[in-house]
Length: 386
Image (cartoon, rainbow, N blue to C red):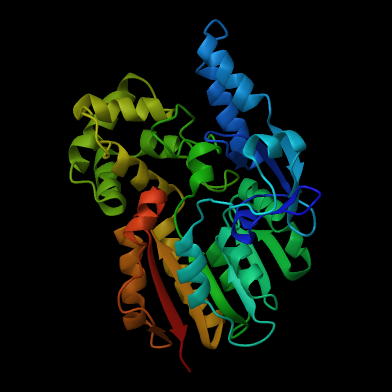
């Protein structure tokens, strides 16, 4: 920290923040805690919602944690100016230690595997999400150009904010992966990335019914402008079609019984929300706690079907093979066995690509402990051959 109280925020942490604002407040053990604004909003809301003004302990927590919070802008040099009050609380002088949790799986495995083969390489990220991969690539390789896309307009808006510092090197658009890759001229892409499935935003902020732990409209579409919602799908499908869907896309061993439970529930009234669907499944198989909720595979299967994820992956792989230059690389991160199996078998089906990873790269035990969402991630890398 310099004499003006300005502290350099490490690049990995800056990349994890959409925009250039952070919230800084007092933590425990004379530490300062740093939050992205949206995460701070969630945390502070939970603190207020779980406390009472009539309890002295709760009032003390609000005074010490919420009251000192300050919104601070990260300057062009990646620094934040810490107020004298917060510096005094934490005893900050010249030497400071900044700790945080970043996705090392993304930082190391993906970025290292997608090393640009030449200056000004074209990197195509067709599942931008919140732009974590894209920001890491642009930061590590300052000469590459990004063509980024996502089917979700809300996620694309978040990506634009996060990538504002790289605006001159990015072209972003809302589109599905197979549409973008199918529109590229043959041999024009050096590097392609596909990070399959949903992200944290879909579960926590989209309000589209991706999680059975929140009571939301049962939609599940990544692009709500098109297609059939999950509610329409389960209310219109026959029991046999539902059983097939749950087996094929969810690997649900209880598919027949769960399809019957859904049919019985919708006979009473249409299933329109996540809680209605979850209750229908729990009526047959009560949840006794633990990590595996009985509705997990049902929700997965519906999401995969609604967004045509399997068909879209197959089309995207074919299009990527055609778009890559000789020696170009395609990295795919899959989170369930259906997608991973398709990617694993693809080199045997297409003579123009070869597998660079004999086995999928997986996160370490240490990373899974700090980042549980990464536990199912499987990274495979394919290369275009002449």
